[in-house]
Image (cartoon, rainbow, N blue to C red; front, side, top):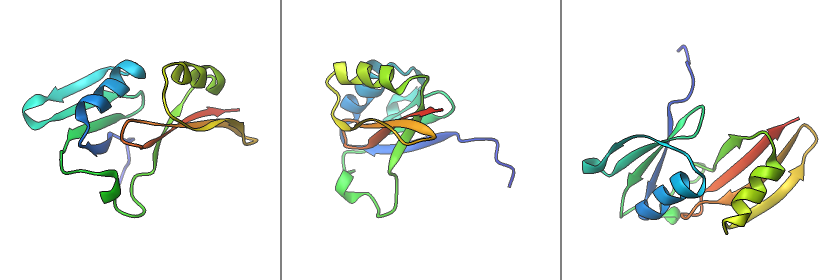
Length: 121
């Protein structure tokens, strides 16, 4: 297999409108494509996309063990990016932390999925 890169990360959600608003308005990522008749929107997060699927039957509790854990976003400054999301009232998991080779921070989307801010040193 010759891997060219990632294409997308799929998130099924019963909170489609809130999740789309969070990723496009709160975080400011653009919509790459959408299929409203299927309840799917692709959101461009830089080097990959999020396939956000409107699935009313989906629940965070229904996620398989060992499945999706978090999306990591490479940023120029974790401190600046963290301040920006915190100012918008986003629920925080871990404030910026220097782990030696990187600075990281974590916050949640409306469904409780973790998003990591990652600044390589």
